[in-house]
Length: 250
Length: 269
Image 1: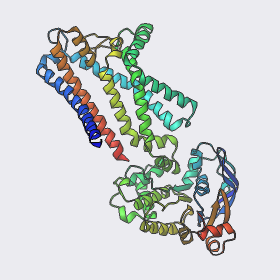
Image 2: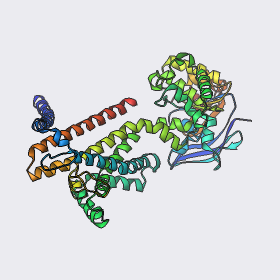
Image 3: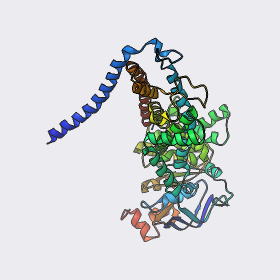
Image 4: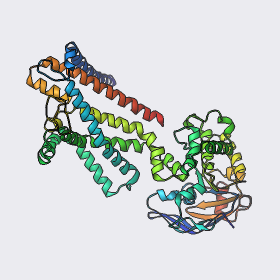
């Protein structure tokens, strides 16, 4: 059974048909990469998976998105619980302007954890999970805005891990970072897939080949091709995919 | 040509600064020699020309005005930025209303306050009528600064909070408000400044009694009003300057505080 299945999904921003008839099965403990030129709907689909699109006015969705066989767009579905299960890391690091500790503890506190000992434990575990514990363990009281961009992004990953999600959505998590930080995050993502299902939008095709198991190629709101990363990059089935990955456009 | 422009620009800058300096210096020079301990006696008489009752009335008026106007103004700002649909008719209407309110001369507020609060609602010249009148007057200022403070909070922070499964209220109180707080506070301080400096809107609503107000329905006079009346009576011109010194000091302190908080806002991001 797949972790997330998307069935006959269409999405409109008011009159603009942004996603057209999307069908996709996302497997647990795999990294699925979304690639394609700008404005093709990758991020839009990603944001549909934890209903962040609810915040966009005029956004309408038809079709089904199932998480563990439950329709997440069902009226009775608890959006806050969904977002706890499906965590998200954004394109530019967005730590809250508070201490590193409070950043990580924000999510667990939101979901009702008050015990100091328990929070301490979660903070350490999450920061270790984000591969940043060793660098900042003595600076937990420091404002999270005062560390480097790469560290901020790993804090944001740790923050997402702190609510114990099942799926992790990453929207071009390395596009604002330098190559060294990027390499650290790519290694981290490999590590994280043992526990989490990861969906990642990337502009960088080398990154997709380096980290992902499956790749979906998007073009003007449609999924042109979806399959094993290796197969797709060595032998694309569609002419347009081939053109894109060989760098003829985009 | 560029030399003339540069000269004109420098001159304007110098004039602006110089005029401010001149006014403050003039008031200080004229006023400080006449500040006497007797001016701070508990009761006003024509002999001591005490400004103490006026100081108390000013503090009471400012406190009550903040009590009335802060919740209304701040919540309106929150509604406009965080809750209302962008570009809805109601938002437009509230924006037009606040902009119009902020353009009305204060004497018109005074007239309205007199006709409505003092006469129609029979509040008499009172702290209550004065408070309500200046509350309406500073409302646009508070709404505007709250809006701006909230809009300056990056959307990434809100999204980050929602993405962790936090609800709207928690996001606003835990993430947005702490960042917006300095901006909101500096707006409040500016409105305090306006209340302290106001005369026209208060003369016919708060009244001009010289005693310390002993209740909501009691009249009084604020420092600015006190100055205005003393100088129009023409008997105590030196004491007017002395009172002016105290008023100027208070306003300068408040403006300094507002700038300081404003700077903190921009640094916090």
